[in-house]
Length: 468
Image (tube, rainbow, N blue to C red; front, side, top):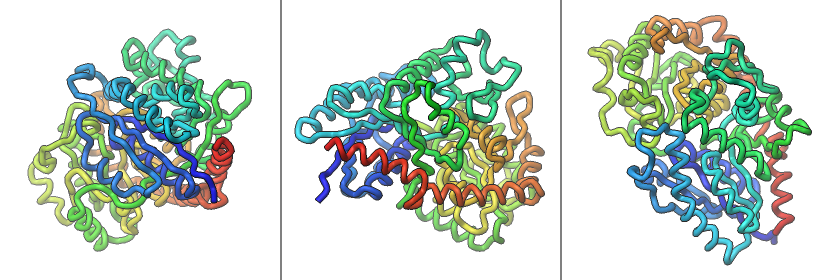
């Protein structure tokens, strides 16, 4: 009988950082049932229902502990979302240390795996004789930028967004400075300084798991693995997406799936900005009028508007989002589309035969869900590294269309309608559909029994087993 191998994982705060590391843990124990994973969860305020619901579905060899929640008043007021995430983990470090000390006093743990925002917890790995890893829930392209930023920081005096030429990161599609992650948009800010610190810490881990595959990002992964760069080993283990029961309003979920059953194959555009993205009232209006103008069927997951794009990320919204739609919109579009508040069963929606496109915020979880269903994209990035993902999807993989933004930062209704028509009925949309089908096959192959990502994870597991 094989010995049980114990590892500990620490997600970043927030549902969209908890889900990826849990899905990684689930994949690990499904492939290697003698593994046991302990999940140590820092949280901001009381944990949301969505987090509790997903935890209830876990296998018996994944257990979890919620740390005492950090109080909102203890965080820097008005700070960027990334700073709030970082400080939530920093304030949780004594609790993380206490849990690890208790666990390792009775059981040997071979590895500590943290989310990229929980990297400070890795300082405890050596103390408790554990190997240290980061689970990077987004692209190898973004990770390549993380390692490249220190070099660019020394060579550049202006803001990156003011650079006239795109930035050429080894192995990656060239990226304009204005499309870099939020943390790199203001070099004098605290959030940028914290970003540079975080990147430096990445260099001193035993390895980094990336939720991507050789088939999706061959160039960036090859560059990251080049000898002589001084980077830690990089393990592409994706695409890993959410499986099992989804949280949310099941009645609304069934209602929208029943509506999709009545539509023509490939005729519906699915519109959703993920678990945390919000639009301003003005942009919400333009999107609504654009959907109406396109004359295409749509299924829109609506959230109440906010001036902050990441407003729903750490804070629950209680307003009825439908009251913010333009006057008469629901009545005028009742035969054209369906609007549902806050949540939809996304994987079931994307896998439905009537869905032919996805207007997305380009969060990597949502992107991979679309990719594994072969659904092409309209890319509408909001925050974090989403603009970088949009560049990869549109210019690298060529499976996305990106709407033009006017001088006031708005995507106007006519542009919305045009890009929808281009995706849903144009020649370019047809080519993207074909490429997306190829990527779907490549992504599915990577996680098969003999796939590249499965083999990568199994080789590392062998190393861990030899430590027990």
